[in-house]
Length: 318
Image (cartoon, rainbow, N blue to C red; front, top):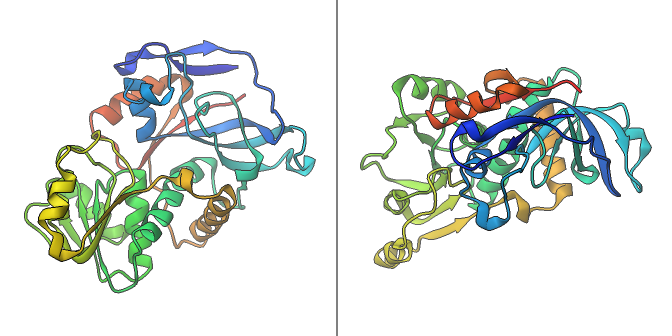
């Protein structure tokens, strides 16, 4: 099969197309002929080498989620999955390829009317947004600030917070044009990337992290909660705890959230519900651009340049 590997860490030029042996599903897995693979922020961190400490090595095939048709099933898997069109997370990677093995317990059948491209724009991002808001203990009538709202997770968080009755949904983004697109999706206030001095939020959902994260603790109301669901700008500085202690009387909460902490069954249930909502027109998939698998390096250049609103999708045909 054709696949894209991180031949060398660093620039997008390190992403190279190669021929690899066709994978075989092990126990509890299915083999998917990939139609679409999502390009996510984690893929960029892996390609740069920022996640090498977590076991990601050169030669890795990126890609955390795919959609396509199930070709075969490993032992212990219901054989009726064969022939169905599905979305699924890949676990540690492997999505930038013509074929991918995925855990059968997290496969979601695609409903009629939802494309493979839209499913990978919605899938993983929607699950993180759903459980990220739950982790923040968000309730209807509260105000929410989404930091880094132009990516897949941010866009889904904006939509879900608005749909669930947020009093206000503020966003940080890089341009007025992006801000207007976010207003269409449910944002009520558009801020620059720094958030200026705007405050008064019950919840901050942060997709960015990085050196500016502590300043967003200052945006919180008493009993406010900041949840980090991504780290595209790297880890925060070491003074987060000092910032928390300085605001001791406000009883603030700071936490991180990863979808890995949620059961596969719960992720699958939420994903299926969101796909159904998208078919009904209640949620919107935002695909920035669709590119062939061989242009993965171009997709990453666009990510590095900050050009992407929504998600880039790579298409493959086994």
